[in-house]
Amino acid sequence: MIKNSFLLVFLLLLLLPIFISDPVVLHILIYTFFMAYFALSWNVLYSVGQISLGHAAFFGIGSYITVILFNYYGITPLLGIVISGTIAGMLGALVGFICFRLRGIYFSLSTLALAEILKILFTNSSFVGGATGLTLVLPSQFNSKIPHYYVMLLLLVFLILFCRKIFNSRLGFYFTAIGEDEIAAKTLGVDVFKLKVIASSISSFFTGILGSFYVIYTRFIHPESAFGIWRSCDPLVISIIGGKGIAGAILGSVAITPLTETLIILFGGELATVKMVVYGLMLMLMILLFPGGISRQLAKRFKFNFQGNVL
Amino acid sequence: MLEQVVAKGIVIGGIYSLAAIGLSLILGVMQIVNLAHGELMMLAMYITFFLFSFFGMPPFLSIIFSAPILFLLGAFLYKIAISKLKSEEEQIIFMIGLVIFLENLVTLICSSNYRSLTYRSEVIKFFNIRFTKMELEAFVFSVIVFIILFFALRNTSWGRAIRACSQNPELSELVGINVERIKMYSFAIGASLAAAAGSLVAPIYYISPTVGFHYTLIGIVIVALAGAGNILGALFGGFLLGVIEALTSYYLGAQLKDLSVFLMFILILLLKPRGLFGGMEND
Image (cartoon, rainbow over all chains, first blue to last red; front, side, top):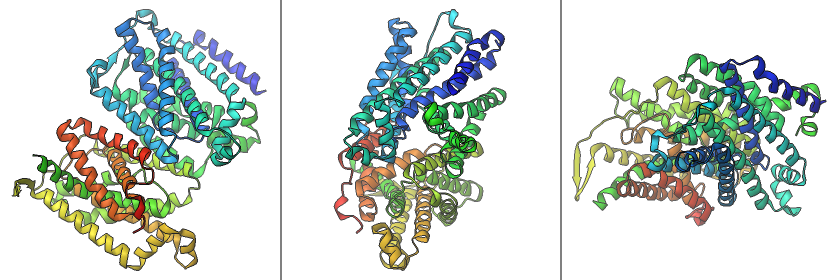
């Protein structure tokens, strides 16, 4: 049943731009997919029990590489997306290789510190435009929102299918085992360090692709929008509100993104601060009152198991 | 010039070590890294700033206000939330929420403008090294707070209870210490130490809602250098970090000051996960 309704929603979303061509609505939808995708790619690392606070690093690297490849070497962004993802994935493996020696909160902090290091380096390097950043000058056939809508939708669906495949494979079972009890997994012969590095590189590969999409969509990147702490917080907040796994990422994004984006469009950038205040409050309240997020609450209410079906 | 830079570093380092001791206390007793430590400092900096600009209160006297306010805030936070969190994951997420909340709430109320507080900038010469009066006062105050804390932890009954809890919570409970209450006190005391550090650093560095994270990292680097619960180690760690920071900002420029702290953070955690002074844990 889940599979059918998933297919139905996908078909509806595919047909939607024929009926609605209002750019604001499309923008909000694109952002909803965007956040769900971001949360889901972050979730791959979360599934081995690591809370990354530095996903902005992979996101930013993805966007910057796409712009640099296009502006300086004339490589088309469509190829740039793949290259950005690959480089971000390699960076993710490297970060994992360094930071997985640390546990729990020290891991989280070291990822945060790495994102901040990149931000400082990019702010002080004139090759990437310093604090003012870089602009991607694309031909005008990219101006409509509809192609972006389809690209983001397809990226999201691809990631959902990929994660489904991964989480139901041997690799995914290893991930879950590590996430639930690392020491137990280790005693049973799971190579925890290697698997964490794999999870990290998958997660950052997809995040790099998202960064690349972001810069193609907004045409502009600067150190704050690429590596800012709030960027790393987005997937975390979505995942905590929605819950773990695929269902959680989608539910969280659907619950939050349309609301915050509408408010920001209505009230302007001032609201970005209010949004962060609400984010902070929500993180604290969710973890105190509803640990496990919306998906666990729904599962409890309707005696329904997301894990077996979607995840 | 070198001795000038080193002396400045030691002045700042004394203040850093206060913040780090607060962090160390919380980590030792509760096994929680207080990610919001820098944000608590930031709150104290704003309290100090507003008391100074509205009532002309000297920054160091405002500790009388900022420390109790943050003591209460810390106790409140512990009581309603932190004591109820079960796993480390929940603690991390709650703390991140608190950081985001405080930082942006202050931005909303006070705007994100950088502010600075000028107080007693007359220069005193001291063996070829120039200090402003304010820096000397800040250093003296931080040493006084440190000495009070050091002897309070060593000689008073609640100080002993705190140290007992950080060594072995189960045994402390067995000998009749109310561990829950001690945890609440140590979180509150940690917060008020952050307040003291914030009030002292306010006239030296600029104030903005986003400074917190920098101080949190500095605190964690110092605690990592010293080992959790090691107060003397935290003092020397503070001096060391203050000097390193002053040297990098003098020789490599102020933008790279943060970079040196981040790099040190990662290096120290990787090379010395148990701390440079790790051997002499818990006195």
